[in-house]
Image 1 (cartoon, rainbow, N blue to C red):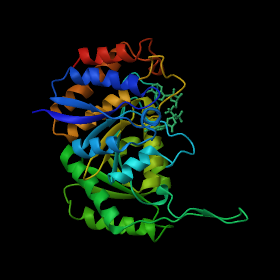
Image 2 (image 1 turned 90 degrees about the vertical axis):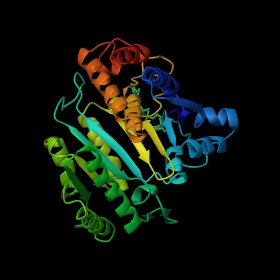
Image 3 (image 1 turned 60 degrees about the horizontal axis):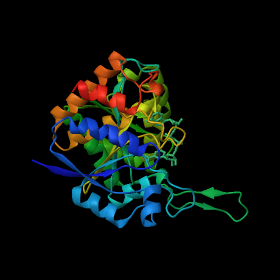
Image 4 (image 1 turned 120 degrees about the horizontal axis):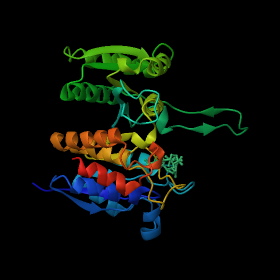
Length: 335
Ligand code: NAD
């Protein structure tokens, strides 16, 4: 059966890593066809806006998008195109796996295999109610947490654990101090957790979580947390396993899901053909799982690991002498 996905090539290194990722995807008999849509600087130049209606329509129609990084110019409309996409499609779950890979410059070349599930639509991160007093001395921000928002993200984390055979969910909070917001999140999480007796649930305060992640990351399986804590923790986790070149992310909602590399458009290396396509390819793996092609997702991940193990044709950020397309070809040859 064929399925069409929206493909956003993005800015900077975006088109280079997307070409590489699609060349690997094409080698896999997934039945996917691609509909190109513009966003970011390239859309601003072509259509006069950063996020054209035709792109939103394409995502709404296909419900699945694979997206390269976008450059959000400072001072042009909304503060971030990515945040705008999350709002438009209510992409409430940000799912970021962090896994040790061989031959990567990392403090944990083995033992890390965790997923951060971050609430994506509320909390301090969305910047609601920001103000600065006239004298510039006092800044304010509203932090809103809802029972509905907490419940659906925690449920997502527990369902993910069940679906993927994971055993433990750690609820990360700061309810000892932020009694209203983090307190509501934690209380709601406890109620949801009780419905999943087969999955171990533990609770951890966010500051301790950061220390534990650095000292004993192997104790974590799935982490679920609110928006700002999740933003920080998921980057910390990417750092544990070799940085942003290997960090994929999925933004999942009820109307659509968008899969992307966590890194940005890397203008410093754009056009040189040396960008690492791995993060976007790992996001392709998440996408294949999501659309019900877990065998292809596993094939792809195994081919990536085998290529890293062989240290074959790797890009310079991984210490190799290869380039974006040689890396992709090496992965495709091992599918
Ligand atoms: P960045 O992630 O683009 O780059 C940080 C460093 O990592 C750079 O040295 C870069 O060369 C390197 N790097 C990143 N991805 C790489 C890859 N695949 N292979 C090899 N090296 C890689 O972060 P930045 O410089 O802070 O941001 C640049 C632009 O990207 C900004 O306009 C920002 O708004 C945008 N951005 C977009 C997204 C997104 O669309 N999801 C995320 C973050 C930043």
